[in-house]
Image 1 (spheres, rainbow, N blue to C red):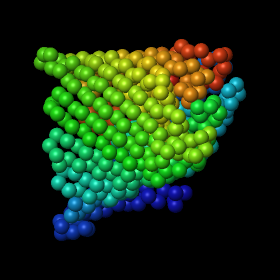
Image 2: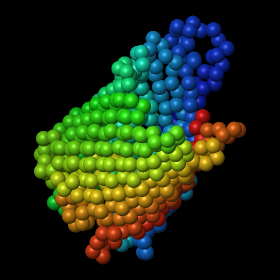
Image 3: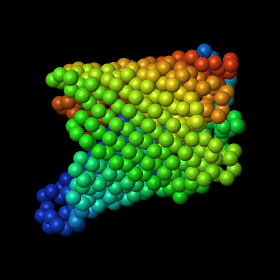
Image 4: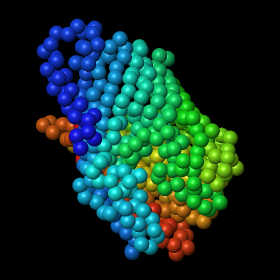
Length: 460
């Protein structure tokens, strides 16, 4: 047991050494000074989730608790190093190894709190999440190693105990006025809800892969060939009111994704603003989409994807209201590995996605209000998602019927003596609209379901 947590014990031993070192008089230009004056941060998190499915379908619950430490040195001639990790305990849960008796389906949501690849694992749940070297120059940096990044498609997707992690090079360049340039080359991914690090192409398919365009089970797990993921992004603040973004995610030998987005604010009165945004996403396969065997490929070469998004809203002091629309055309499925992050569509609501779908019309309304000096934030969100038929395999990868979704999300940040502690309560309901042909497999963990989440974080 001790050996399994070596990284965590090492960080715990480092912490008091760092604190006492402030009393020592090491040369401020020395490497020793950089290590002794580094920063230790920590995070404790508990997460209760329960899902109630329709009628005779299986219901689930899980209570997880965990903690982690991260240490980062002070800069030494522009260089810094960082290391951090996290452990998780399964306090109580349903038997996540059991399949539903009617549909033979495994759990979808609660399993992501622990180890997606081994639902029986309740004890050996720890992961090295950060292990990097960083070089700072002027207002920019380059970082290499295990880290957590954020792009429109590869991101933390913070809806379970731990986020998705990435390994490779990442650079942020801020040397041009009003412009941020981000560049990366990623070789490995540690998906949310897993403990190991996988080559980028090997990580695709760890989550349930759905069906291919012919209606048979997707078999791209361990059958895709790719050297890595190249990312380039530029964000330009044309003014205080206008922000423009352009991103390219190139997954070598599999597919390419381009995103263009503009966000504009208009002041109509003091403390009153109109919010508008437009978005365009284009995807196309590279070579055969990952495998020469089309039954095992990820992005079928006969397809491409186009996505259009529009959003308009109003903000007044502590209140915001937004109306959004997303359109995925009939040219093919909008695809991006769910293991890597959540989609950036304006109509996205927590706990469901439109990834894997084509010919989609999605509408959402989002409201947010802050209370008690902005310590309490409450969001009420609703959406309608008109999807292709569940048997239209060409455009429906996961057999998802059309649906309504309603979310209530409340967050509270404590101050004073317990500063650093925050709570979140999320409730949602998804109601079926599309035809499911009297097959329960199109309902379980998808529609006609309630879910309740209670999350507590203490960050120090």
